[in-house]
Image 1 (spheres, rainbow, N blue to C red):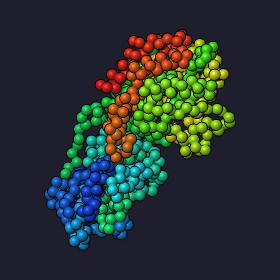
Image 2: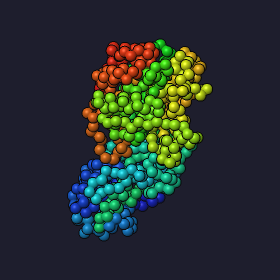
Image 3: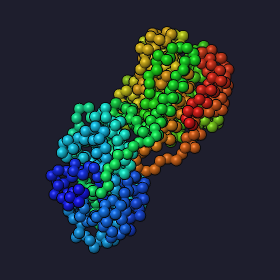
Image 4: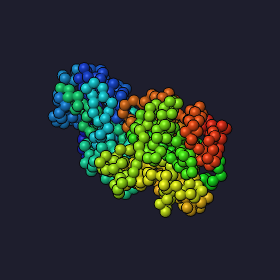
Length: 605
């Protein structure tokens, strides 16, 4: 069967799209370079094994690849080749035999191809639109840089396949273990996030039209090797023509996914722009367990009615994708004391900030102008206590005109250039429907609160900026997403309910617990191989900073010292206003300390 295909494929390909005929066999992209460049190109492949999974490297002048094909000749076994001279494309040829003399000093690289996984997609019951439309797959240059090795440097090239929204996870599962065919997708959603401006204008291949309900899904592509060849400007090089791969003798065998660590799950983390993220089932379950742990209701306020499943997971996936995060906290519930702040909020905010620093993200805190000095002291204490690696920039916000929030969040007020990708409010006083701010006892504390809610309202209008609200009573910034449940189930909820929504709402028995859980969840995501590969778009190497991330997690010792420092600054317990080792009227020892231990235990299992 294979010999018939091999003999006839040059005639078949232009008419029938050869991959339709041969989709049961593994296919390979081809790059042929001078032997002096071969070692560096092999390193480049290993450094970017998503787009360039290396199947075989020949010796100089060897036209065969016995491990892939029993009787092959690379000079004739691709339907069409591209010729490059000093990085310039100089023409296409159907045979390389005229270059036989030069090929004696050249090395051939056979690289995995995404056409090899199309049968697996079909077997999962997923339509392949380019097959339906009888055209080649779409390929695009992206703005994602590959990991450079010597003269080999270029941006990632991807293929795009439209996948029905309800089939996304099935498509990911079908391809994730096919590492030699690029594995799982590297991006799901808006092409602009990859720097692709127009799906109707692919750089290689043909435009493929999306059906209603289809989501663009992008896989790393071996044509990345073509871009590397162009940029290295070698005197002579050859590649296959895109869509005209080398066909091996190897069958595309189905792969069974093993443990939950290897099973990918897909979650939508943004609607504007549309963006999905990926995580292992094991990591997702751990984060769901964290959400369950913090969801208990020690104050018997009725917060169980505010819970929305998977909000912690989706919030932390969005934060994980962010480059720059703005945190706000501060609930001046004790209006008759100075300072009026409570001690629920700042510890959770600093726990999040510490993990963001360890993950090398930009992080800043915005709070009330009148509380700047207090918060600066708390941040300095956190550095001294080893909670933070360095001070977090502290900002304040004033509403001066209708554009103040946009100017604060974006460079020159331009929504296309946001300074922050994600906003987090944790135990931050939230504006009610009447424009006032209330503590749990229905006391209006608006005179003590700067309108930081403006930033969350403005973020709803800025593409690419997502928000999270963390609260334990429904009157906190971001809890507008569950305001109807607050009004129905929380004491005084009809008055105090925050009206301002966040994209994600994390509900906890104590808000600090929500902050600790976010820090722990970010650690879990950072150590998840599936999520890490998706974040770095399958180029470069995994970060090996586990000990740095581990040391950034909250601990009983760190939180005990921080609470003592807050007491010394006169920051009181929310429910009782006492200056004791308690938060929200609950003792630190055996309540908060036990929660921290449970969260850490879940992380380290």
